[in-house]
Length: 162
Image (cartoon, rainbow, N blue to C red; front, side, top):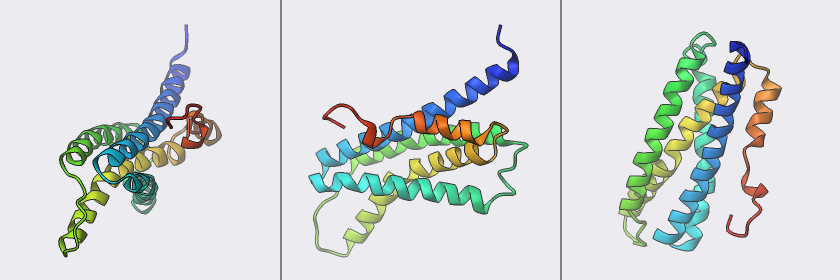
């Protein structure tokens, strides 16, 4: 029989692992969608938007420190990851419904801003959740970071299709 504190640690570490792995999957899927719906070189925009979104989410947690305290960390983490999941769904629907046309008018700025917001929005929530898990949890930060690194990264892909 596993004691409750060990069970909660295993559940927390599993959640961090699955969150980080889903971030990688989201990035790969967005890359594939952009390469099909737009020109191929646009696929690399998703990598930049992932880095932008993750950084923005981390900065939200950093600057709103009083709002993200240790006392309500698990509840806040559950709400943020639920928003992350919902944002993925909305972003995919919007991304599939709109392509990036090559036009030379002033509306190109609006089209690009819309694309940037669609691609970066889920990563903002993911950055918030990962930052909360690393900085506000009661678990040792070294183990949490190790679990974060266990989730496969883009450079650690073993097949040719990654």
